Length: 455
Image (cartoon, rainbow, N blue to C red):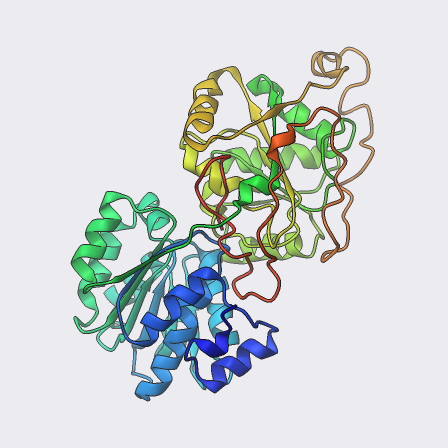
């Protein structure tokens, strides 16, 4: 078994790993660290949760130390681009942890925060900068920051940046950095436009890819409710208030909706029946997003409603359930959504609500991801509740104000499964996720049969 000590990392980096209890590299780390240490450009195909942040950050920290260049004025030595604020924050936190003993300055800049504060904190420059493309270009346009001293350029979740419309920003930024920099691309998939970027901005890159022995989707039990669009809220309230039992024991519940207004509407209606929840999407300010994530992590408010923008930015252990309130119109997004559960070797539950006008989306998800759903029946009294005959959702006090929360770090998700179960669906994870940086099990998220999930 390969150890971090076998990969050529420096003593300060190894000490930082030891302090965090990490001994063995994940597959993407074992493949990527040696060529990055050698200064090679790299193209990595890996899902979120496989430890790819450490795969590029650990050797880059060593290369910055060895070069021993001064921190540049109004610039940086290493630039990491991330598609979302949340992911940028997580990468910056990892950089600070791994570089704690290397004496490197780390900063992050994202949209939704004060531009003036960003200008002030970057005035003296930094060694490692983690940024979202829009905010970085804002500072460049204001002559508050330059990229002429960048030694290492990293594009993380490149395909999601493409999905979010950052392709022109990526091209512009890539043109502003020195030609002799080292370039590292990481992406869950390899669309044509990403291939073109790699071909144009990388020099003979080493290509590494992770093919897991057991996909995350094999540890996710997937269920389906067929329900009319205007009745989904009622069903959701009955499930969350535990007036209708579903598989699994609630710990943290992540709900996906298609639009920002849809997220806010769900949260508002849940609050009206005594079920606290938070929303996270692009219209929320950075402090609001951080507060919602913090309350979700601490299980203070264990229900979070999100758009797909947050799908790859949230890496929180203990998400027991993912609810697709609305099915995505892109099958791959379904994979990314359900990948928020079944982290670090644990099992998870994914529940989809499908209305009549979403049947085509469901068909595409089944066809392109090999997802297998077990259909669940609506509550016996569902029609009466919807039509206001007998106890309604407002007249009947919810059994719980929120899902029962088990202490984080408990064993597995203690799930109560229905009697009817697809026996072929349980796949045993290969190896554990313990002692591995990056928050995931090795190769835990791959697109393959049974609709796997991503970081």
